[in-house]
Image (tube, rainbow, N blue to C red; front, side, top):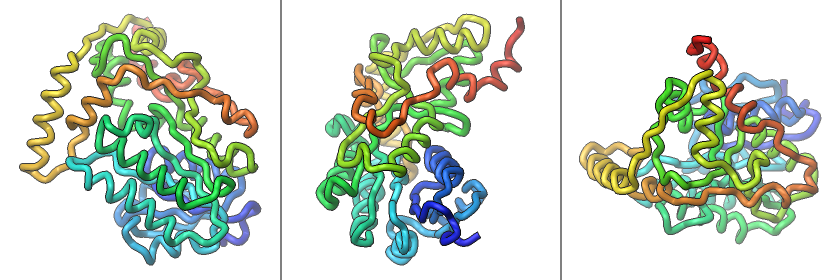
Length: 319
């Protein structure tokens, strides 16, 4: 079906082949929005098949693709981002320059939902965090408040996740290797709730002009012990815990960075990522700023883990 047949108009979405972007695409399609999806060449097969959706093949550096993406759209949901890189330039190219390319090509009345990261709260920690904050500032400086909203989700998990899933799978097998200080606290958000939040923001004017730090509604976030207890309940047995000292993380990060320069590959664990992992407070500001949108998280930790791990958990139970 043509995008013009969609009952609620056209939304442009970047990052639709990724974990978060695909969930947002499915939610917006179900809500009646037509979608134009920017997807890198070779990633088209990872995009969910949706009604009223058109794939635009290209990247954020492709001005022609970006102009086609935004043509006729009322709103841009900017979800694409670089999470791996060996240098600051690796992150800047996508998270800052790519964002600016979108803004430069934006039609006069376009509204922008900018999906950032809680890491943007602490730019000095890493190249990634600095680039996410710089991307936010580009959006804030370019658009009036009624045409922009910034979402800083915490750690996002759910079916299809490839970042937190290895850690959760290890816990499900009975051994938790904790890459951070034992006393750290952090917020979580299920990907379905994040997608619902984006749909809710698009449906109204409430919440625009603000930087929001949503979470799953658990006051004060979680300690590692809370996560271990929840996974243990799911698997029916305790989970053993091994904390990786901060110094070890830093050494591994430095070694990875050196290896990346030698082989030309972008590692996940870098000195900056090690500093992020060692940071003791990744608790979101919470959902009070979103009260006017009518959105509330629906999946707490226990339910979210069941949706993410239940098949594997059931297979591994012995009771």
